[in-house]
Length: 125
Ligand SMILES: [Zn+2]
Image 1 (spheres, rainbow, N blue to C red):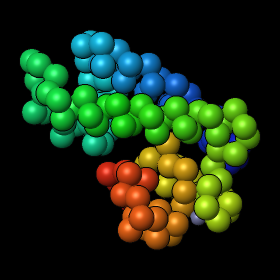
Image 2 (image 1 turned 180 degrees about the vertical axis):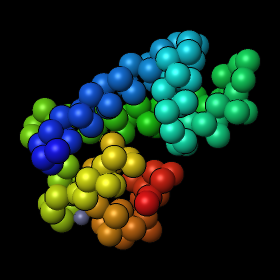
Image 3 (image 1 turned 30 degrees about the vertical axis):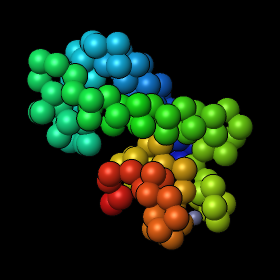
């Protein structure tokens, strides 16, 4: 698969994820839960504690992720998705596949961690 094809796939992932998060914020966790079964991520942990009711913690995680996804989708529209917003080098696919809404490479994310922890996300691999 070419990088371009991989990025197109990630756009689909982001769109589905955004849909699921919006539903979850409306109180319908079913779509998010079915997505979470595909692989472990930050939502799983939050999901376990949520169960019957949406905890405020979960809402916070979802809102934050939703914002990050919107930012990534903006970058897709502008044609900059997959580039580090700091050093402008291509972000490795492995990182994007782990964190589809990543907008900076690991190196820059680590540097920025000291300034703005928000950019880090939960899973840097
Ligand atoms: Zn960078």
